[in-house]
Image (cartoon, rainbow, N blue to C red):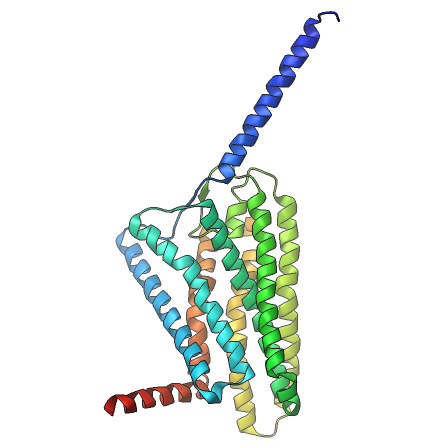
Length: 338
């Protein structure tokens, strides 16, 4: 076999390219398993310390409100109805939302450090998506409950029997697990070989995609399409349910019955508006149309403010919940006097 300088040069270049490619793979694999840095919400200036205190107070109020509402529903026999069973599941989800994000943000603020491990980032993203999707599905099923109660009251005990309620709750949780598993695994499959600084106070899918050094445009398009299915389909069920409810309420002859229907349904519609308004902004509006600062505000709203407001909306506007609280306080006071 004859010696060829060109062949030798070609072989040398080939081995150099292969070595460079393997080095890039090693760098990518190393980057995928390294830590991320969260930017956080506050610094240690005076106004930011005040805002941090407000966030901590809101976090505490939200946990207490949802815990009290769940306790009332499970201890008061008068609240052992399908509507309040679904509401207790909503309160459980609203406890999970701030617990996933706020303690980590508070610890980073107090320690002046925003590092989060790759596994911690994956867990945060998974549980947030699980809770978010589950809550969206649950809210749509709660609107179906109100439709049956107002439009088909005689069939309500059969159509909303315990097995149906358990199926509804199971469907909401299973939907959350399925979507969270798929979206989290795909998002973390991308290489993050550039900056590892997340311009957010927790690991959220849109913020993390901006750091990938791969082309994520096809996935972002698929994410928008899945967002339409995940958000628009439940919203369509809610709109359909309440259009029938509104028609039935307008035909009611009793003013008291109309008032009760409007009270319970308006509370649910308020919660739906708060939750879906923020979700649509984050997952259906393209990222180029909102800044990281806007993302932080909206994420804080749906992960902290909305879970705090939900028990207030349902308790302040619901006489049955108010009376249950009065009965619990009366029994507690009576026992303490004895």
